[in-house]
Image (cartoon, rainbow, N blue to C red; front, side, top):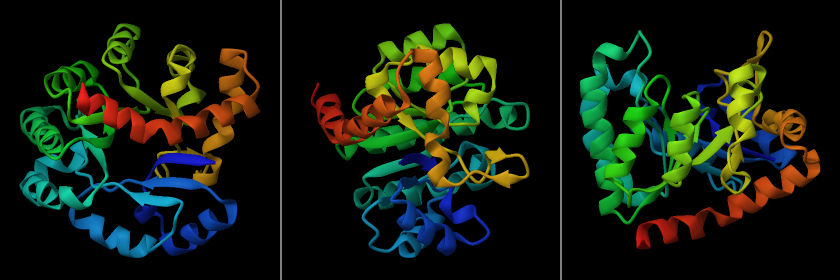
Length: 249
């Protein structure tokens, strides 16, 4: 199983979750919301072979913590994965869009300077602005748009720009999410939970729940969930090649 966007450090008992990740043999990208959390999460994860930690600065906290972008850029040589980064244009964060855009562009520029990174990107209510920024920084790396919720036209543009996508059970509960997922390119698709924020009833999703979306995706695509699971695993293996091709273009 693959959970390519999970906030491991924000569970009440992250160490226990990591033990269960091991027992379920789940591959996890543990995203962080601030660069100050990155080293702590790496220490928590230890030498687990199936868990990687992404260096992030979440757009929802940029208004208060934008100065930490310098720390993120300083840590970037140590990080292969970057996230959660991006832009958030929802009402609660729209007023900070100016500083969000400055921070996001600086991160993309630093990624480009460092030879590109695999990036997991937030784009809620800001898909066009995110795509504008990515278009200006084509060598920043492989952009993986997590829980994409833009319009059909924005999705077409994202596909044309070479973006990847990560989807999860919570996304496929909505009609819009299903409609978007149905036309995402299968060779650029990964699974996620966005847990513990994404929930199943009163309980947070767990990393090993990421594949719970595959039966619904199978209905949308006409493919057997086992075929989709193999495709997702192959996509994960292909990410380094995709990164090399993108920065060499």
